[in-house]
Length: 48
Image (tube, rainbow, N blue to C red; front, side, top):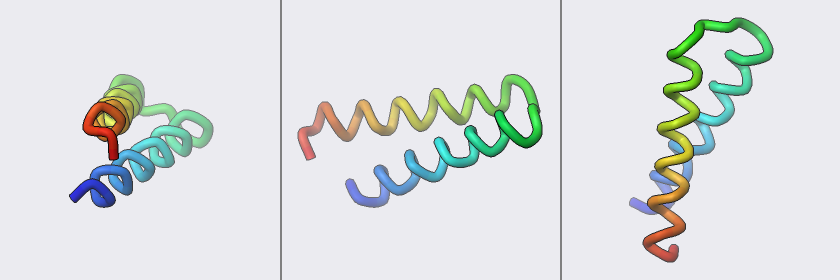
């Protein structure tokens, strides 16, 4: 489960970066970034 959470966070950051540099969709891209950051913070807080 933790590896899946980390994988999802990495994918969201990659999609955010692609959207930011290739095509700006606006708030959707920043929403994906926030989700990725939250997923990483949850993983760090759990200590795994």
